Image (cartoon, rainbow, N blue to C red; front, top):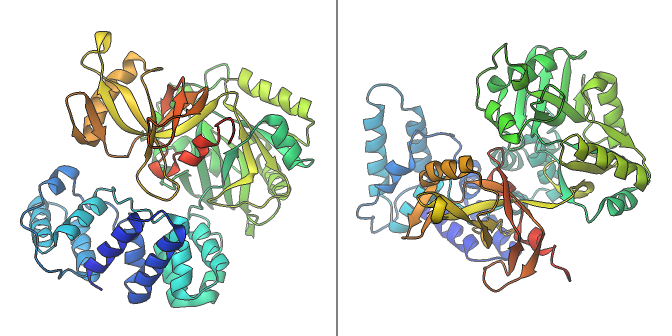
Length: 508
């Protein structure tokens, strides 16, 4: 298959907001691809390169322009081979080899292909091929049942692998996919509740109410002495969290998959600032004389235990397994509370320094990778994870610092983030300095007032509400927005959508 055909489909998908049209365009492309090409095409149109890190930075790619080719000659297999060689280039002479490979590939690319390759290789390819849309397209192109394709993707966490199973193995291969200890599972996500009382009544009477810890999501896998720890974005951080690994190795079992949170605690047991927890994710270890830097894991779900898959069992059975295995590591919770008892639990969570509570149906299975009503989060104020689109230079005491943030919400149809407001509130001197140092590394362009960023940085914003506004493309404006913290544990694809923001409108 010619690369030009992939580029053409990418442009067509980006040009429409219709999920049906996106699925049709992607399905048609996959119909034309060979069985061996499909995983690569699926990966690219999902904005992913199968080889992972290529050792090529933005600066190197920005200089790769030159006169484009007049006719398309590049193929999917040919470009994938170049990516193999880039990823495998190491040692003396590797920089020269990478440069030569890039010059040759970009020199053979048309203008449209050059733009596609540059965006793909820098992680900026966001043409709306969301996972759900791609799953639909894989099912359509392979002729396999959509439910089977969705489940295989949920359990593999990989669209290319799912596509390969669907095309090469069919329904039997898809149905055979199960939980695999050591392979990360897409985490189940929660939706904001209208209120605590509404969540308890709607999901009740059989519910559990957990503390919502001010920590980072972790998924812990263990088989024998082999332990793997993953973030909510499925990044393997095992080597950076030896303290969690040691806790997992002490559990009285042979094989387990646990879902939970981790955080660092003060001597009195209160959570330390979120930034302290996140700084540990980039560390190779902990000093023996600094017990406060230890990451403490707390779990709220058990997906597998000693050969038994629990992911499809009701939450009540999963919690029974978790309690039998590690009752002392369970997140504080109350089962089947009245509204008044749930409120007392929320008050206790806030008093202990945590974010709020999670209300969960005890009857529900673990719907990995989905936001469903079975899990609802309750916080005392509205907080959203938004994308930093730019920052304006400050004035007065902030002169010389990047200050006022341009904020965007995720487009649910996969397009670029949609601007919904600005804020300079909540920024400490430390954050101002960090922004001024960090933002230029993500710069796309600038003018005399503003540095505009590639959509790569997620920030948690607290606000009092929203109002209708024609000033911003999202049609809403944030009221009294202030910065809570940056979220290096989250990708842009995990930011809140503009629909979630609009849901706060009084008459929505």
